[in-house]
Image 1 (tube, helix red, strand yellow):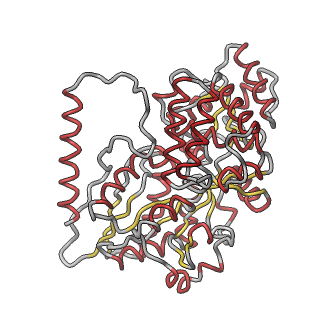
Image 2 (image 1 turned 120 degrees about the vertical axis):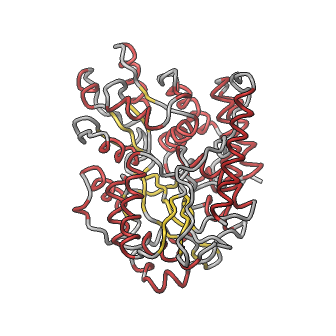
Image 3 (image 1 turned 90 degrees about the vertical axis):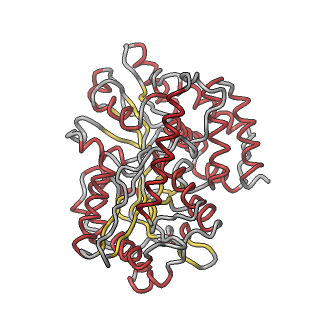
Length: 444
């Protein structure tokens, strides 16, 4: 049945591509599609039919390249050693931050064809989408049998719970508010690593005057990622948190200052950003073609895959204005309602939540364990610093990566952002963000 469903999906994708090819090349759209609804690419690996009488588990994610794919493969290796009789189907779909994969997943769920388990972000993406849609099953019994409540952070459990039920297995902790920089470029231009927004703007102006590309940026979701870090760096953690609870007014002068800062920062970005992936943009920094890039710490896994050396080819710091704050996200895996093979899915979740699975996955992925008992010596210098900051910093959630806003609100923000990228009108952007909060957020 899985193979038939996949074949039908692939045929539909091929027909769609063919129809697109027959038409004229589209101009830049007046309103960009939200990042949750891009074209749907085929998955990188089609499901295979299990051997007669065998079991299989289809796991859906967006980890198809760089340290992400390598980390997933490391965890799959642990799974296959533990469960050699269960065939693992890697149904990963390419697309930064899961933009493509989640569109494909939504179509499959709507069609009643769920994978056994899929990747989701802890927070409102999980609770406000999959739990609200009755699409995933509670995992309380699994947490009890595996003893996970003893080794998972107390601050994380509420983000994956609703009405006393726990709904996913976190595999990692990522940091969103990371400023990656090229140490040589900064040294050559006598620039200290900036700690405030004003220092950052001044540094980029100096670099621009010296003929150096100040900021590397990619496609639209990376611009949303930049936006959330600038909101945090300008407003501070309390007012930033208030944006998502209704205690900070999106129409306030303070938010206007943050949006003005964001508009200024965008003027220092590369002109071809719309055509670049996050990897492309990050690589500009480690190749010496740009000074700064704002990206989550999965970029560090990518840098190491490229053979780059930390503190030589790249350095890191909190995004200016957010020193002492850890803006986090967490990847997790769920058990589908109507999973084709729930026993195999539970076997996968046991590995995802295990110490062995997380120690295999995270050092390669470029993240730290969700568990608190992983061996710190397995991790490199950057990830060890992230562990220290996770344990000591103020913690806030990510917008782009599902923690603070549900899919509907995030989509409204993304639409407003797309229009702003085209017209540069800060006042209109702020008004649209106020409207988005009223439409889908706590400002109703």
